[in-house]
Image (tube, rainbow, N blue to C red; front, side, top):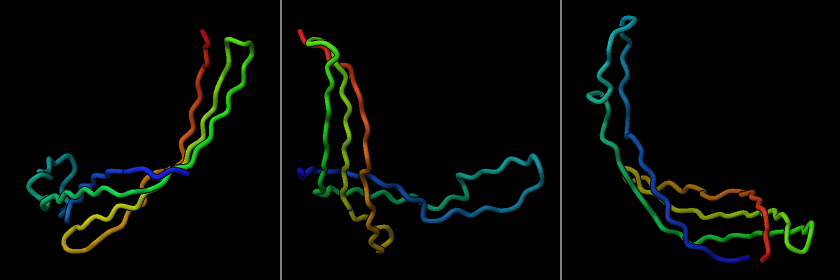
Length: 99
């Protein structure tokens, strides 16, 4: 298991006012939107991963990767702190060629 530095960015609309309108009426949503608040945070998290390689010949093979990452940055929107879990399971694969 290794530690990693994760930087996250989040934007949230503080509110959105919607009104009913006749069919096919054009609405100006921009005028009705409340201000958007932006926040970012860097947090130290962790990652765990494994990779396996299988060779068909001494020069050609394939590889599979499985990795899990997680960090919990805290955002402050309107004076209310919100913790978000970022990171997830990652899968990957590739062709290995040796020269």
